Length: 134
Picture (spheres, rainbow, N blue to C red):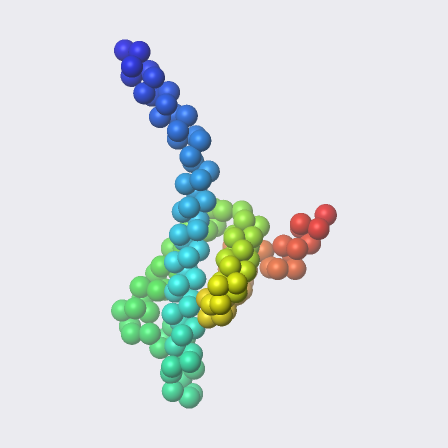
């Protein structure tokens, strides 16, 4: 009986000790997936004929539907995270993309941040900076 108590105690301590790290990992995965969707959409702007302009409608229909569904699910999940955390993580990701010489990724992150701000999921850069300057 004591062995099960020890195992349960170790499991409980491990759960509470690793829960914040797990949440951070999941948030990073969600933001990365959304950024990849936006990066794909942004890529169509450079490859589509003049007048078509690119965008989600320029993707193949199945890919456009999958991207729209993934984006909607991502926004629902991101609503559970504080807005300043989302903004902070995206700004860090943008700096990293810039340092790694990935301007397309940085542009996608900036567009994603704009979209999330308009959805009320993230803080705008000005509001974010003002909240940290106090």
